[in-house]
Length: 398
Figure 1 (cartoon, rainbow, N blue to C red):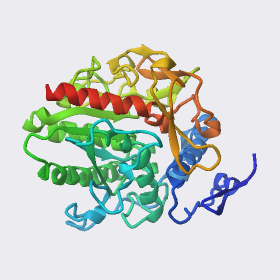
Figure 2 (figure 1 turned 60 degrees about the vertical axis):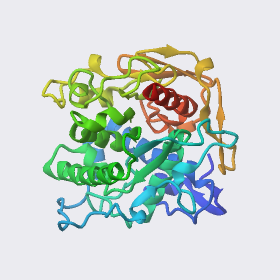
Figure 3 (figure 1 turned 135 degrees about the horizontal axis):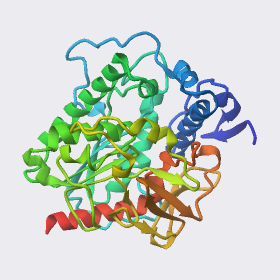
Figure 4 (figure 1 turned 180 degrees about the vertical axis):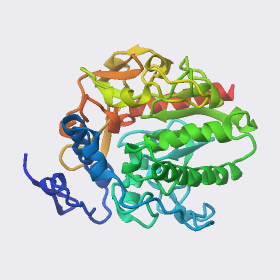
């Protein structure tokens, strides 16, 4: 494999990145929205192999933020009245990243009656602090690119609102410590305030869609528990896409205010999946998940892990690749744009995880150990997610 390639007219050194040297993104250009997937996954792959080969202590030493968590001054968080504190908002000039659509895709509902609140995954990979500053350019650009490749699946029927937030650093997920918990709490506090601002500008009774991935999905579980469960706004929720984070149907869902989605035309419910290829080895997840305490105080168990197949919209379902209306695939070599390729990826829920098969696009070394397709949880099923939310909105409107 060559150690350097040309991206956005500038050299990109793969070997230097693998050796730990920072990648500085080039100036804005169209192809970056897919480059971020490769950059982030390379870093995650390195960490995952460290766990497999040397144990978690090595990765914790390399990724744990330096020093202790330092609480920021009160009232120092982002003001979500200000446009600058959002990754993407509707009707901005230029359009926000979530307004992007794959080449050749046409939305069926130009009126966009719903509003989506999307929470991006972890994109801050430094060790200098426990929470990212909103002024950190690299992490914000990566977050915008994830909004472009994930949140865009919802813009066919909705206007998408994606907040910036002081996300917890990657290392916060490797420790069970006061510092790590404080970092996650700070990140969630931003998300919660952004959600309050989002709700405040909705039309009365307007349908809403909630979506997140990875760290964003974790914060979404808390948001559902704190801001939706038992509140009038629960009646406005079309669906909640809690993707790339394990959710227990017995220990978490009862406290989250909405039931798990059991059918494709069900509204007001929760979807969740975690993608793996065969042979799947999810032990890095189950080792932490099994026996942990859920929202209602019960212990989480793998047999209770929620899996809704995005190809069928049904809990514990399965579907062949012919049911996949479009996997989001970058243009060959140029990475300037993306297209939807149908009939490439099938999937089945097995033991709480979504096992993918079929003629998968060549994702090279960017699949995590254990055949974990975490980074591609949305991209593998982009077309079906778009159809799923359209169908659930129609059910909500009936």
